[in-house]
Amino acid sequence: MDAPSSLPLLPHSDAPPLLYGHRGAPRRALENTLASFDAAEAEGADGVELDVRLTQDGEAVVFHDADLLRGDRRVAVAGLTLLEALEVDLRKGEHSGRMPTLRDVFLRYAGALRYLVELKPCPSLRPSLLEHRVARLVESFALLEKAWILSFSADSLRRFKEICPAARTVLLFDGTAFRPEGRLWPDLPKGCDGIAPEAALSSERLFAAARAEGLSTHVWTVNDPETASRLARWGATSVVSDDPALVRDALSGPPASPVC
Image (cartoon, rainbow, N blue to C red; front, top):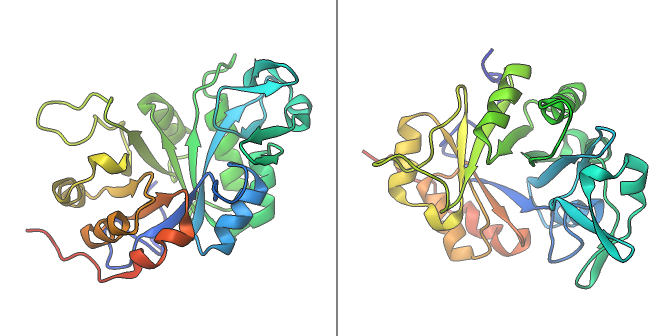
C-alpha cells in the first residue's frame, strides 16, 4: 500500500521545509524528554526528531545512547526493565529529566506535532520487536500521516515496511556510510521513501537527484540560518535543528526552482 494520498507535504513541494527539533530543543532542556519536546513546540517547530530503543522487557522508550549512568555505574538501556528505566534521573550539563516512553510522547502531543522517529539498534530475542512496537504505536495513534520512520540500518527499515507498508521510511547516512561509485547516497532498502543526509553531505546536485527519483529529503543537524535558507531554496522536505527558534525564519524564504 502506498502512503496516503492526502499527505499535506509531498517530496520537493513548493512549501517551505518542515522544521523538526533535534531530540526536541536540547539547548533549552534535556534532549529526548517531554520538557525538550515542549520547548521545541513553543519555539515554532512543526515536529520533533526522537530516538527509540527497547527496554529489557520489550517496551519502546525515547533515549539516544545505548547506555546510561545509573547511580555510580553505566548500564545498558536494554538491560533495564521499563520501571527501572523510568526511575533513572538523567542529567546532561545543566539539564536533567526522566526518560519518556514513545507512548508518553504520542499521548502528550498526538497529531499536534509531526515526528521523525529514529529506530536505534538494540539487542532483542525477537529481531523485529522494535519495529513491531513502533509500528503498532504509530498505527494506534493514527499518526501515519504525521510520522516518518528513520534508521541508519537498511534492514531495520525493510522490516518496518514489511510490518507496516503504509509507513514512510527514510535512510539516515553520514560521511562514513558506503555509497556506490557515482551515487550520492547508500543503496536504499525496498520501498524506502526518502533520505536523511548529514548536513555536510547536502548539495544542490543531491537534491536534484533525489527529486528525480521521488525521494523526500530530511537534513540533520542544521544550527545555522544561512545553511537552513540554502536548504529551503534547494527544496528540502525537512530540516532538523538543535535550535528551532534560531533557524525557523530562515526556512520561510522563496521555494526552490526546479532543477533541469
